[in-house]
Length: 328
Image (spheres, one colour):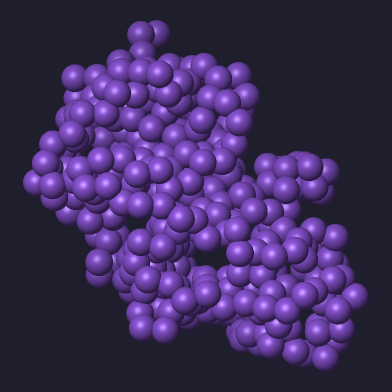
């Protein structure tokens, strides 16, 4: 069977209702929803939540089927050799109207042993933040396993959590084991490994949408928590007008910020990876492989690895550019 030629791909957002979610993804980011939506999964290979194409000749095809059909042409040779038929990243927009649970994630080794899953390393880029919005990142006092358990027993864990104020444009790298939470009034873009493994250690004593208390993972978390300083989570970068500013480099993903007031051409032939563009402000026409697609604020587009250049035609847009680096 002759396969259609690849082209820049749009996917159907998968909207996740959450007890802590809000209305911003619908009101400000173009998501068609009602009720308390916490997350929009933009590109996903997570089992049970695989993204479906919404444009062009491949409309309706699941992402994992495309990987099976196109392999390195879609993912890049190194990415395909490393991850096989599993899409390696999960791309989200998140609206935290209320505080998320205090949580952490296992690394690759523990996640494989316990859950047959990848670990979860992630980064956040703050899109919007109300006055006094903050994140929780680690602890505000020296902490070890024994002291942590004493705080749990005494019900004083929240007193020991480190709070970090945020404004739009801030960025953070969350390593496995880092105790963290997104605070109320924050909207952000999240780039992470393909994993949905979360160890919840505190949930503000609130019931879920069905009236029951959400499970805590106290014992699972105990041997995973990184009790060292979390100050390295904050990413320092300098935005570049009409250029690409590197925000985050990790073994799992590379993220750049593009703030554009005019057209730009991006050479992607040497990346050896698919490239994802998340539009966070404005609108842009993306042209690659002879195909053009207009995306606007709240839209995410995947350019296959076989593309050589990407034309970004805009009079004003902000984009996150994400790909998998070929070497750690």
